Length: 216
Image 1: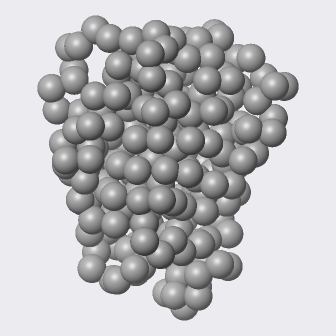
Image 2 (image 1 turned 30 degrees about the vertical axis):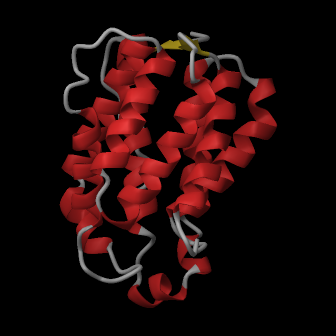
Image 3 (image 1 turned 90 degrees about the vertical axis):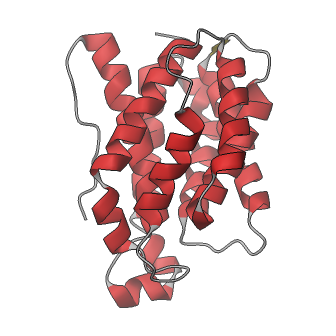
């Protein structure tokens, strides 16, 4: 499979949302930065729900889907993690505007645009958070996307780098190491991507697969 259309992208993001809902309590328990208020999972869930409400039955191209999604997410973002996600999807939407379907190259460019926008959304970006995994994974796929034309292989590569970067978050942020956890916002984003990949693999292969590779 070498392109993604708006309908499949929509289904994938709904699957990511479902994954976040399943992990909401775990995400809240992991939340120690920037303050230990135990709401990261809830904030990501609400941010996604506010953005996805009303998008279930719309038939649009990939660019139009991300444009409407990002506009709704800006209005419905909750908390620090929601603000970062809102910035990320705004960058993605800007990159793919006007495109009916997305190739691997389009996705790579969109992810780079997304992490740049996410960094801009935060007044004082901190490494060891969701921002770090967005940067590391986007930089990697930008350098290697010309080696892959298959969408499924691209997402598997992306998730692998996200997981590797996530596992280093406590090395970059002392408060995480002290609490014995990795970054909750980063883990939340991985749940979104894992759900998206499960949906993609189900679409391609006709059975549900679990693409999550982290359980700590």
